[in-house]
Length: 298
Image (cartoon, rainbow, N blue to C red; front, side, top):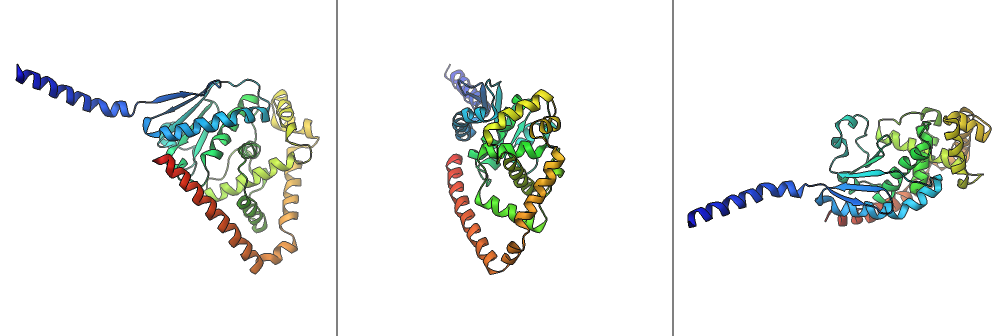
C-alpha cells in the first residue's frame, strides 16, 4: 500500500512538472475598459503589458479627439518576444530595427519586448505612434494615405520630436542625404539610417502643412479624404493645390532654410561645439530611458 502511494505521488509530481511550462507560457489578457482594446501577453511580460495598458488608457482620449474619431472599434495589442516571429507572413514586411508594428487590416499592434526595453524610442512614444496608425485607418478606411503623411501624423500624435531630430533634419537636408517627400509614397527605405531621415522629413512635411491653419483642422481634412475616397483628390479639394505642388514647395522651403550660406559657414568650430551639446543631451536622455526600461525587465 505504501509503495503504491509513493508511486502515485511521484506520478503527480512528474505531471505537475510537465504542466508547469505550459501554465507559465499561458497567454494572459487585459481589457482596457471602457475602450475595446485587448492586450495579450505571457506572464513573463507582465510589466511591459502593464505599462502598455497605462499608456494606452492615458493617451487614447487625446488621440481619438485629434483625428476626430467618435467611436473606437476593437483593437488588439500583442506583447511578444519577437514581433517578426509572431506571424511568419509578416517577416519580410517588418524592419529589423522596429520596436512595434501596426497591422492596419487586422487592427493589431505587435510590441517587440526585446527591442521595446532597449531601444532609443520608449514605449511612451511607440504605443501612441502605433495606436495613431490604427485610429487613422478607422477614421479613413477607404483611402490609402501616403507614408509621409501617415508617419508624420503618427509622430506628431506621439509627440516624438526632439532637439536631436531637429539637428538631424538640418544635417540631412544640408548634406543632401534626406529623401524628398515625393519619394515617400508607399514605403520607407530599408536601411535604418535612411529610414530615420525619412521619418524626420515626414514629420516636418506634416507639421508644415498645418502650420498656418492649425492642427484642429486635421479631422476636417481627414473627413474630406474619406469623402473623396482618395488622398490626392481630397488633398487638392481641401488645400487648393496638388500633392506634387506641396512636395515641390516643401523641398524648396527646406533647402532655403538649411542650405543657406550662413549655415554653411557653421561647418567649423561653432558647428562642432553645437554637435557636442546635442550629443551630451542625447546621452543624458538615453541613460534616463535605459534606467526606466531596466525597471520593466526586473
